[in-house]
Length: 297
Image (cartoon, helix red, strand yellow):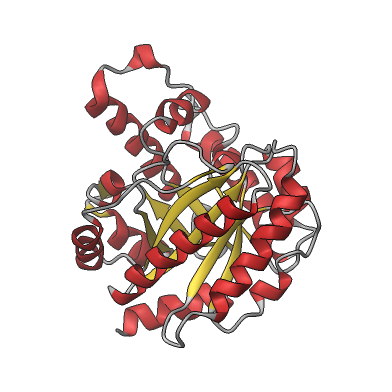
């Protein structure tokens, strides 16, 4: 319990951001291509996942990937089950880097209905949560997607997210609730207004022993989620990069003073498998500094 208490305190109050290292399935080839590893460079899923684990390990072990600026890291299940520097990944993150480990638990998105994509069913979630506890994971993350300002769809997405959050909390983990709004939605601002209201309604219905982290698209209206950030059931509000470049994501985030970053593509932007250790550390360090500065703005 002492470890989880220390991690909870860190997530609630320390300066920094959460690194999203949880690309899976269809997003893995894109992440590798951004890193300079093309499909021709690997054969089959096992080699693909080995390549992406090597990339993630390189990030985790980089000079600037420490608790000075990085609060937490979200892992894919295969990454949790793998080792970094001879230790299970979650253990290496916390013991060697001072970074709080999270686990991506969703199984992807259902087909679009009512302007949203709900979470696919997760029938084995209880078993996964039990394994996460054994591995030293602090919290979880599951992503839904909002495509348009549809009140029915947005209410359904948020209700499903909070149902999962209760299940995660019941297993002794802290849930990251992630109802993403697509950055190219023609009704992004209107959808975000609806989302903000639904989030507050669901937060007000949570029992006192359930705390959540909210992971949200950087809003069109700066400060939209400030009320949620101040809610007693919210440990932190974090922002996803959603396809924005590092520069744009950081600029937008810096206008939202009660949000910190939880970036994936923006964190790894400009990194390449062929870089020397010094080049890699310099490039990653620059990204980390930009994201950190935007998170504390």
